[in-house]
Image 1: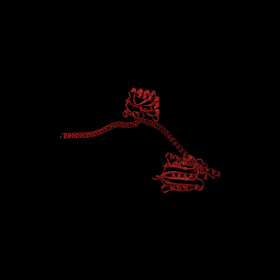
Image 2 (image 1 turned 90 degrees about the horizontal axis):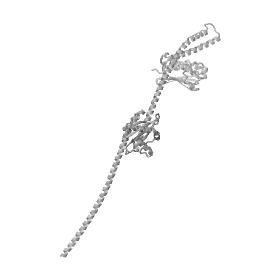
Image 3 (image 1 turned 45 degrees about the vertical axis):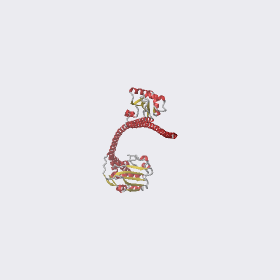
Image 4 (image 1 turned 90 degrees about the vertical axis):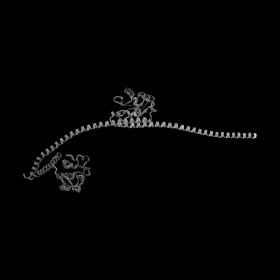
Length: 496
């Protein structure tokens, strides 16, 4: 029994040990799982820590980018306002005064100054100053003038330089820093197309101020805006000066022309008065000569020999020509002086042309000239003086007969304009040289051709025609070519 008890106790101990081993194994497995979980959690925490660091870094970068973006936006707004301010002035002296210091401060700089080179004074003249004391600026201006060759060379290169420019000479970089009392800077040339050129400087004493390529571009734009404004102002000033000079010359020329015109009017009046006076004086002896010649030809003083009769007929014929000349001169003088009375009325051109054609039919028959006229219904009524218009047609058709060869043609036709009628008198005559077209309506002018050398004339017919047409508020002109005939055209008003 004791032995059984020992066996039972031994078995119980064994079972206990087995159970303890099993429990230990289970706990060990759980511990392993816990360690795996802990490692997993630690890894997750490490990953979260890295992500947190990345988020913080990204946030810092975003803030920095936002700051730079805000700076650029503010700079662009400042540039816009600055450009608008510069462009409002067309006076060179006021352009730099329009550049408020606040604009340049908004661009991110503490100091700014601008200079233009004066050829007359041979030095750089200060145009704008922000952030410098008078003594400091005086020293800067003095140094710029003394070393103008070096800074003029910078201007000639036409490139903006700054404290971050990779190609800028180190000595020059330090020279600019020391001269303008700035650790960071941008120096841009002012380059108008004409006139004085110069420099625009911006900078800051803070060495931590970061200048970017965008800042360089911004200041370059400002300098270009100033250059353009200077060009506009100088061009305006030059244009204004030229306009003033032109107005002065026009005024002087107008005054001279007025004086000349007055003199011409006086001379013209004297000429008209002289012609009128001489013509009247000539009429009396011509009347007497013609009267005596007529009495002698009529045989009232006895029969005359044939030779004397022939000479008296020549005297009578030439007297008629002189009377006709005197009458033309008097009519021209009257029209020019406004003393010619015009009895204007509604006239039928067709009837006037037929009357004149009948009057000149004998001359046309002698040369076998074919005469035709075409007067349309809407272009036959005119408002004019009958006698004067008949004289116009007599002169024009008479000239056409004179210069048209045997078996030639003369055509008259009319056409309606808005409130006028145009009349064309065309012929197949010898034509008129181009150089004579402008002078043909002048008094006493005769074209140099064989017909005029054979046929006598005064050169007053076309001048009288021109005066009559112009007295009716019309115009007259001619188109012609040698050997191709001539077309004389004139206008007359329609009845209202």
